[in-house]
Image (tube, rainbow over the protein chains, first blue to last red):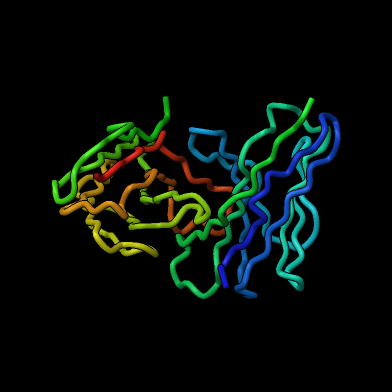
Length: 114
Length: 118
């Protein structure tokens, strides 16, 4: 079982709609969770981090965390063509003593159609 | 401008020919890391460094070496490259590897190095 799992997509969403990206993780003790966006041919960039159960909002982005279900999601409201990218879920698993360990999922490719 | 600089951007080489991919950051970051990205496998950590002269293995260290003699530089060395090391490589840095877990501390990524080993 992969430590961080994402549907590879592509996920196609009409412009202006809500895009919902999902991620599950295997280490129940994981404490910190991140969403990175990666445009084609570019490097990843952090867009959201979340540490507590519930929702965290930043502009059009909302990260949702449910530790009981080992599930983290990213909602993008009012989707724009510029949101078309691959979204990487990343987790800092508790099993690692080093705080610097970040495990990435393989990413979900999101396509916003005009 | 704050950045992580990787060189070269593209590299084609042959099996067994030693190569070095350089990584330099100008942000005085303590933490640096190397990842490789392959289709369907995501980003996998090769090596990381918490500070000068402190390095440790990531998930896929076989066939790679690193060194951290200076804070700003973290080169990735392939002593005898093989075709299975063909991949997209990213260097990343962060202010502190310890704080990476609990704060909004983020990883700054370089532009990537596309390596092909024939």
